[in-house]
Amino acid sequence: MNRGNVEVPEQDEESLVERLEELQLKLQDMEQSQKVLRRIKHAFKQTLEVKCRGCSKTFKPVIFKAHVLSCQKLLEDPDSF
Ligand SMILES: [Zn+2]
Image 1 (cartoon, rainbow, N blue to C red):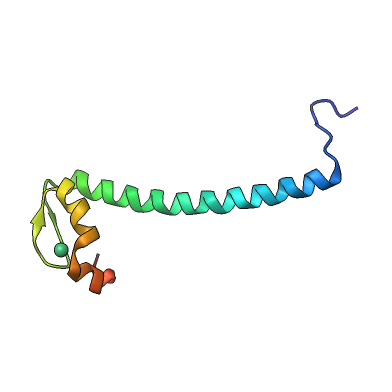
Image 2 (cartoon, rainbow, N blue to C red):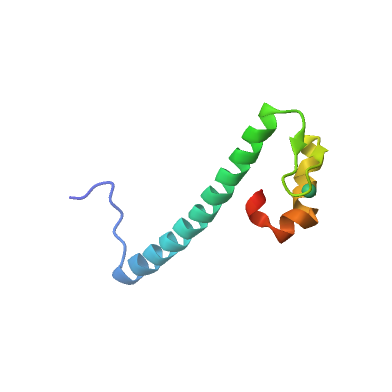
């Protein structure tokens, strides 16, 4: 007796695996953006002003968040961020 184990018909099992793989991919995406967010948050905690590496202006963190999305210099050279 396999108590606790739910018996799944073979076909359902296959689609279940597919869904699991989909989910894993989504999780990987989320982990990536979580890492980026953590890095940004960490940088914000360390300083009250953030200097943009694109245009060398300093901003308050809240404003900087919006600035990095619109900074032309950063868009031209994303590696400098
Ligand atoms: Zn800038």
